[in-house]
Length: 251
Image (cartoon, rainbow, N blue to C red; front, side, top):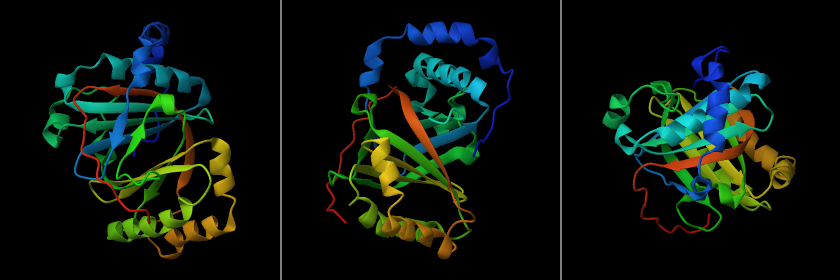
Protein backbone atom coordinates (compact mmCIF):
# COMPACT_ATOMS: atom_id res chain seq x y z
CA UNK A 1 0.00 0.00 0.00
CA UNK A 2 1.49 3.28 -1.09
CA UNK A 3 1.49 5.55 1.94
CA UNK A 4 3.41 8.68 1.17
CA UNK A 5 4.49 11.12 -1.49
CA UNK A 6 7.39 13.48 -1.46
CA UNK A 7 6.94 17.22 -1.77
CA UNK A 8 8.65 18.82 -4.72
CA UNK A 9 7.53 16.20 -7.26
CA UNK A 10 6.70 17.07 -10.82
CA UNK A 11 3.01 17.37 -9.91
CA UNK A 12 3.90 20.01 -7.32
CA UNK A 13 6.06 21.98 -9.73
CA UNK A 14 3.23 22.27 -12.24
CA UNK A 15 0.43 22.97 -9.79
CA UNK A 16 -0.76 26.16 -11.49
CA UNK A 17 -1.07 24.61 -14.96
CA UNK A 18 -2.72 21.50 -13.56
CA UNK A 19 -5.26 23.62 -11.70
CA UNK A 20 -6.17 25.50 -14.86
CA UNK A 21 -6.64 22.33 -16.90
CA UNK A 22 -8.76 20.74 -14.17
CA UNK A 23 -11.15 23.65 -13.77
CA UNK A 24 -11.57 23.90 -17.57
CA UNK A 25 -12.76 20.29 -17.93
CA UNK A 26 -16.40 19.70 -18.91
CA UNK A 27 -18.90 19.14 -16.12
CA UNK A 28 -20.48 16.09 -17.76
CA UNK A 29 -17.61 14.01 -16.38
CA UNK A 30 -19.37 14.31 -13.01
CA UNK A 31 -22.23 12.20 -14.37
CA UNK A 32 -20.07 9.11 -14.87
CA UNK A 33 -20.98 6.06 -12.81
CA UNK A 34 -18.40 3.43 -11.90
CA UNK A 35 -19.83 0.00 -11.05
CA UNK A 36 -18.32 -2.30 -8.42
CA UNK A 37 -19.08 -6.03 -8.60
CA UNK A 38 -17.30 -9.02 -7.03
CA UNK A 39 -15.10 -11.02 -9.39
CA UNK A 40 -11.70 -11.22 -11.04
CA UNK A 41 -11.56 -7.70 -12.48
CA UNK A 42 -8.15 -6.22 -11.65
CA UNK A 43 -8.52 -3.24 -9.33
CA UNK A 44 -6.00 -0.76 -7.97
CA UNK A 45 -6.24 1.22 -4.74
CA UNK A 46 -3.41 3.52 -3.68
CA UNK A 47 -3.63 5.78 -0.65
CA UNK A 48 -1.20 8.67 -0.35
CA UNK A 49 -0.63 10.16 3.09
CA UNK A 50 0.82 13.64 2.66
CA UNK A 51 1.09 16.90 4.53
CA UNK A 52 -1.92 19.16 4.18
CA UNK A 53 -0.36 21.89 1.98
CA UNK A 54 0.34 19.34 -0.77
CA UNK A 55 -3.00 17.50 -0.70
CA UNK A 56 -4.69 19.82 -3.19
CA UNK A 57 -1.71 19.66 -5.55
CA UNK A 58 -1.73 15.86 -5.59
CA UNK A 59 -5.51 15.76 -6.03
CA UNK A 60 -5.34 18.15 -8.98
CA UNK A 61 -2.51 16.12 -10.50
CA UNK A 62 -4.57 12.93 -10.21
CA UNK A 63 -7.63 14.62 -11.73
CA UNK A 64 -5.66 15.89 -14.70
CA UNK A 65 -3.97 12.53 -15.28
CA UNK A 66 -7.24 10.59 -15.03
CA UNK A 67 -9.01 12.84 -17.49
CA UNK A 68 -6.19 13.00 -20.05
CA UNK A 69 -5.46 9.28 -20.40
CA UNK A 70 -6.77 7.28 -23.35
CA UNK A 71 -8.74 4.00 -23.53
CA UNK A 72 -5.87 2.17 -25.23
CA UNK A 73 -3.79 2.56 -22.08
CA UNK A 74 -5.64 -0.39 -20.58
CA UNK A 75 -7.73 1.16 -17.81
CA UNK A 76 -11.51 0.74 -17.66
CA UNK A 77 -12.29 3.37 -15.06
CA UNK A 78 -10.94 5.40 -12.16
CA UNK A 79 -12.05 7.44 -9.16
CA UNK A 80 -10.22 10.10 -7.16
CA UNK A 81 -10.95 10.61 -3.46
CA UNK A 82 -9.75 13.47 -1.25
CA UNK A 83 -9.48 12.91 2.49
CA UNK A 84 -11.73 15.13 4.57
CA UNK A 85 -8.95 15.59 7.11
CA UNK A 86 -6.65 17.21 4.55
CA UNK A 87 -3.91 14.56 4.59
CA UNK A 88 -5.02 11.76 2.27
CA UNK A 89 -5.66 11.18 -1.42
CA UNK A 90 -6.96 7.80 -2.60
CA UNK A 91 -6.81 6.65 -6.22
CA UNK A 92 -9.07 3.80 -7.34
CA UNK A 93 -8.63 2.16 -10.76
CA UNK A 94 -10.07 -0.77 -12.71
CA UNK A 95 -8.08 -2.49 -15.47
CA UNK A 96 -8.95 -4.55 -18.53
CA UNK A 97 -6.47 -7.28 -17.54
CA UNK A 98 -3.15 -7.86 -15.79
CA UNK A 99 -1.44 -7.72 -19.17
CA UNK A 100 -3.04 -4.35 -19.92
CA UNK A 101 -1.89 -3.09 -16.53
CA UNK A 102 1.68 -4.27 -17.12
CA UNK A 103 1.84 -2.67 -20.57
CA UNK A 104 0.37 0.65 -19.46
CA UNK A 105 2.77 3.60 -19.16
CA UNK A 106 3.76 4.63 -15.66
CA UNK A 107 1.60 7.51 -14.47
CA UNK A 108 0.19 8.71 -11.18
CA UNK A 109 -2.94 6.62 -11.83
CA UNK A 110 -1.02 3.35 -12.29
CA UNK A 111 -0.71 1.68 -8.87
CA UNK A 112 2.35 -0.31 -7.79
CA UNK A 113 1.81 -4.08 -7.76
CA UNK A 114 1.27 -4.30 -3.95
CA UNK A 115 -1.75 -2.02 -4.48
CA UNK A 116 -3.51 -4.43 -6.87
CA UNK A 117 -6.75 -6.01 -5.64
CA UNK A 118 -9.80 -7.98 -6.66
CA UNK A 119 -13.28 -7.26 -5.31
CA UNK A 120 -14.21 -10.15 -3.03
CA UNK A 121 -17.58 -8.98 -1.71
CA UNK A 122 -20.15 -6.29 -2.47
CA UNK A 123 -23.28 -5.56 -0.46
CA UNK A 124 -25.74 -2.84 -1.43
CA UNK A 125 -28.84 -1.80 0.50
CA UNK A 126 -30.92 -2.34 -2.67
CA UNK A 127 -30.15 -6.06 -2.61
CA UNK A 128 -28.25 -5.90 -5.90
CA UNK A 129 -24.84 -7.55 -6.07
CA UNK A 130 -23.29 -4.29 -7.20
CA UNK A 131 -22.64 -0.77 -5.96
CA UNK A 132 -21.63 2.46 -7.66
CA UNK A 133 -19.26 5.38 -7.40
CA UNK A 134 -20.97 8.48 -8.77
CA UNK A 135 -20.48 12.08 -7.74
CA UNK A 136 -24.10 13.05 -8.28
CA UNK A 137 -25.26 10.56 -5.64
CA UNK A 138 -23.58 12.76 -3.02
CA UNK A 139 -22.72 9.86 -0.70
CA UNK A 140 -20.28 9.82 2.20
CA UNK A 141 -17.30 7.48 1.63
CA UNK A 142 -14.83 5.88 3.99
CA UNK A 143 -11.97 3.46 3.35
CA UNK A 144 -10.47 1.01 5.84
CA UNK A 145 -7.20 -0.75 4.97
CA UNK A 146 -6.40 -4.01 6.76
CA UNK A 147 -3.07 -5.80 7.10
CA UNK A 148 -4.02 -9.48 6.95
CA UNK A 149 -2.56 -12.29 9.01
CA UNK A 150 -1.22 -14.92 6.53
CA UNK A 151 -3.85 -17.44 5.52
CA UNK A 152 -6.77 -15.36 6.84
CA UNK A 153 -8.30 -14.20 3.55
CA UNK A 154 -11.35 -16.48 3.77
CA UNK A 155 -11.78 -15.67 7.47
CA UNK A 156 -11.93 -11.96 6.64
CA UNK A 157 -14.59 -12.51 3.98
CA UNK A 158 -16.59 -14.61 6.44
CA UNK A 159 -16.24 -11.86 9.06
CA UNK A 160 -17.56 -9.25 6.65
CA UNK A 161 -20.48 -11.43 5.56
CA UNK A 162 -21.62 -11.73 9.18
CA UNK A 163 -20.88 -8.13 10.19
CA UNK A 164 -22.77 -6.70 7.22
CA UNK A 165 -25.99 -8.12 8.66
CA UNK A 166 -25.60 -5.71 11.58
CA UNK A 167 -24.15 -2.72 9.75
CA UNK A 168 -26.74 -2.69 6.95
CA UNK A 169 -29.50 -2.25 9.55
CA UNK A 170 -28.07 1.13 10.59
CA UNK A 171 -29.77 4.31 9.30
CA UNK A 172 -28.10 5.74 6.20
CA UNK A 173 -26.23 2.58 5.19
CA UNK A 174 -25.66 2.26 1.43
CA UNK A 175 -22.92 -0.27 0.63
CA UNK A 176 -19.87 -2.30 1.64
CA UNK A 177 -17.17 -3.17 -0.91
CA UNK A 178 -14.41 -5.51 0.23
CA UNK A 179 -11.20 -5.68 -1.79
CA UNK A 180 -8.44 -8.24 -1.19
CA UNK A 181 -4.93 -7.73 -2.60
CA UNK A 182 -3.56 -10.20 -5.13
CA UNK A 183 -0.86 -11.25 -2.65
CA UNK A 184 -3.45 -11.70 0.16
CA UNK A 185 -1.44 -9.37 2.42
CA UNK A 186 -3.92 -6.48 2.50
CA UNK A 187 -7.62 -5.85 2.25
CA UNK A 188 -9.63 -2.67 1.94
CA UNK A 189 -13.25 -1.79 2.56
CA UNK A 190 -14.80 1.06 0.60
CA UNK A 191 -17.94 1.91 2.51
CA UNK A 192 -20.79 4.24 1.66
CA UNK A 193 -23.38 5.97 3.87
CA UNK A 194 -25.89 8.62 2.89
CA UNK A 195 -24.26 11.22 5.14
CA UNK A 196 -21.24 11.63 7.39
CA UNK A 197 -23.60 12.04 10.34
CA UNK A 198 -25.18 8.64 9.62
CA UNK A 199 -21.75 7.02 9.58
CA UNK A 200 -20.61 8.71 12.80
CA UNK A 201 -23.80 7.60 14.56
CA UNK A 202 -23.20 4.04 13.38
CA UNK A 203 -19.66 3.77 14.78
CA UNK A 204 -20.88 4.96 18.19
CA UNK A 205 -23.40 2.14 18.59
CA UNK A 206 -22.19 -0.54 21.06
CA UNK A 207 -23.55 -3.45 19.01
CA UNK A 208 -21.65 -2.30 15.93
CA UNK A 209 -18.43 -1.69 17.88
CA UNK A 210 -18.65 -5.15 19.42
CA UNK A 211 -19.12 -6.75 16.00
CA UNK A 212 -16.22 -4.82 14.46
CA UNK A 213 -13.90 -5.77 17.34
CA UNK A 214 -14.17 -9.44 16.38
CA UNK A 215 -11.76 -8.93 13.46
CA UNK A 216 -9.01 -8.34 16.04
CA UNK A 217 -10.25 -10.87 18.56
CA UNK A 218 -10.21 -13.60 15.92
CA UNK A 219 -6.67 -12.55 14.89
CA UNK A 220 -7.65 -11.98 11.28
CA UNK A 221 -5.73 -8.70 10.95
CA UNK A 222 -2.40 -7.65 12.41
CA UNK A 223 -3.54 -4.33 13.86
CA UNK A 224 -6.62 -2.10 14.00
CA UNK A 225 -7.32 -0.59 10.57
CA UNK A 226 -7.02 3.13 10.12
CA UNK A 227 -10.31 4.80 9.25
CA UNK A 228 -10.09 7.35 6.44
CA UNK A 229 -13.01 9.56 5.40
CA UNK A 230 -13.26 10.97 1.88
CA UNK A 231 -14.97 13.24 -0.59
CA UNK A 232 -15.35 11.72 -4.06
CA UNK A 233 -13.80 14.20 -6.50
CA UNK A 234 -13.93 12.48 -9.88
CA UNK A 235 -15.13 9.37 -11.71
CA UNK A 236 -13.72 8.68 -15.18
CA UNK A 237 -14.67 5.90 -17.61
CA UNK A 238 -12.41 4.75 -20.45
CA UNK A 239 -14.01 1.51 -21.65
CA UNK A 240 -17.50 0.02 -21.84
CA UNK A 241 -18.12 -0.84 -18.21
CA UNK A 242 -21.67 -2.17 -18.47
CA UNK A 243 -21.99 -5.34 -16.41
CA UNK A 244 -24.66 -7.87 -15.60
CA UNK A 245 -25.80 -7.16 -12.04
CA UNK A 246 -26.97 -10.23 -10.14
CA UNK A 247 -29.76 -9.94 -7.61
CA UNK A 248 -29.00 -11.15 -4.12
CA UNK A 249 -31.21 -11.67 -1.15
CA UNK A 250 -30.72 -9.45 1.88
CA UNK A 251 -28.53 -10.98 4.61
